[in-house]
Length: 586
Image (cartoon, rainbow, N blue to C red; front, side, top):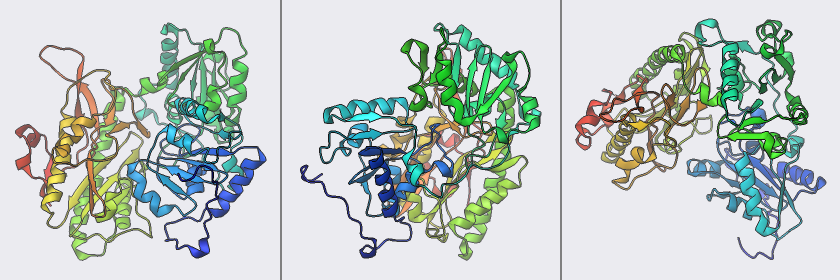
């Protein structure tokens, strides 16, 4: 913005500028990064909010955007030029970003590739080169296209400049990998490999290999789990699976002798033996594989970074689909996975109900806070069979903090719980037999008419999504159904509606098919500086019996925690919606 002929570095004098406790001073970090950029003749640098595997949840050592900006939200893109630093994030995080970023940074609320590219040339420096690492393929191509009018070039480089200046970057956890116990495994890794190879053989484009980049792909394929990512049982890995060989790229020092035996890592023939290579060797190995004549590598573009994608040349050696055959296969739960996942939700419901009962008793005493409530629900879950910790950082939010859709309490922000404010808790657990994710909103006092109206309409959206019938393979979110009741009175929310859920996994999102498990309904409403409402349940996709059509599906809810009756105005609801409501008096 401003005069395009001027190029003034944003001077942020910390000594003259009040910074609240939630803000991170980034002056020295930006200075060091700009020096690193200049050393390699780079004029603009893009810092994505994800890792090399495009994970939703990332390890602390991969939180480069947070390190550079101070902003800790789970979605965003930062751009640093030699004279400017800008962050883009969606509406869920605007308030949080303003609280956490210092005056070196500007917040942009227009999240698209064109606006990101515009900031890269504030001084018309046509010779500058922008660098991007670990961005999805479509994002890379979109950036490239939009930079053409400014005569800028987008280029990938193997060295991450943020890592150069991040002197105290966290280390990889030393924990060894583990295998799932047989009692929670429906298919052996050998059967899974054979199933994927059959899909390769049946594919008309005849791929000779599948490259697995998403961390949950390798974990699922080999029935292995790790501890590299907080709240998710994954480990740094890639897999290159061919019709007669298997290469697993992993930190080999964390693979025990028992696991090597389990993976047949020293056996012959090679078709059913997992060859272990170091994690960092994936580019070298892939590049070498591409020199072989007649090969074709199948990748899922949603989770393959450009650093690997650019090696798969020429184009006739590449086969792409949105998701790899492993992701589409594992999204459909077999009979064992469905049974044990339902069992996990029974135990998880006990933990959440214990929390709500405890809060109803103790909140009037005025001693509990958002943090003590989050700690309590985690403790309740830890006492359940096969618990392996929370599945994400618990969102425990009261009053105005609940208006931040993805707020989590800290020592600096935790509010005391009172009977005068609404309370929102979005939490989940990892169990050996399943992953859970549930959100409930309650009030221990007398809610206002608007709070009851908004909550009821959010609940109506939740119910309408849950009872909808749709054709198998439907893609996209049920946004319209989740928002309709809110729209009728001029209310809305700024985040998406739903995602997938795995068995001792993180979150998944795929086109909808029979026997998938998803956390679909997640409508909400957020009144800034006042309160927030959100409802979320996990559902299994099951066949729907229709009068004429076949292959239609609907949802069966497996979450078992009731809703707060005090917040529901049944006069707004249809008889069908009322029948689909599970309530509890508080």
